[in-house]
Image (cartoon, rainbow, N blue to C red; front, side, top):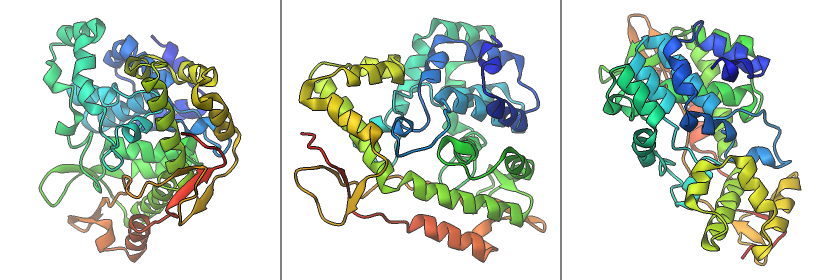
Length: 351
């Protein structure tokens, strides 16, 4: 089962090595299960990587899940918490959060999480490994119960930390190099927050400020017009094909994105293939404050705001960085108040 790690590109290998200088032996068997391997065919980009509007590195949902598990292992050395981190996106369908848009879950983007337990239970391989390791499914099917693995925005936990680091490495846009990630990561420790709960936090204010600045940049990118447009467009394609029985809900959870794209590109209904080709080859979208008729025009006023206000060591206490840094506070406010024009559109009619 060394195939997964040996087939990673050198950048991701080095990145994983920063997250944990060891890969615990028990992880290999779990990563090799069909349910986890399926995530290797899904990009964390929510499908945006397939359009010329973006220049992103391939980083799979499996890569993200493994990276989260390595972060949890690094900080806790706890097997159950590490597996909960590994499994947290096992229910991710093709195009990731686009399906949340299809389900009208713009703000929490958690509409697929309820399937996690079902997928684990149905897996003979995973259930057999859990029985071997004397672990109950309830101990690994919900990473929300482990605050180092996950917590509420704007706190910092392994999941939020990982997608910030990898998105800044190029999964969304290149913001930093590996040596900068290493400097940030080595500055993080387990701290106690204002509620007495363990949380990841920074040792030094200056490093926390740099991290928050990058988070603010990424937060805007997650909500820019072309991203909202692309996610809604892919969600609408899936919905139309589902209504025409050209694709099933099961397909979204069992096929790779390449296999689904093949279906899209060979779909003649409603000119779906032509519209997809226009989006795929587009280098920009148009934006407007008023609705544009006779075009595919998207309006999404409410989308999930991703931002982080981490703890930082302040003498003998731990405090939110915005309380002691004007720079961090300004970056956080910038992320919270980021706005786009109301509508985004491309020149085709997609009814």
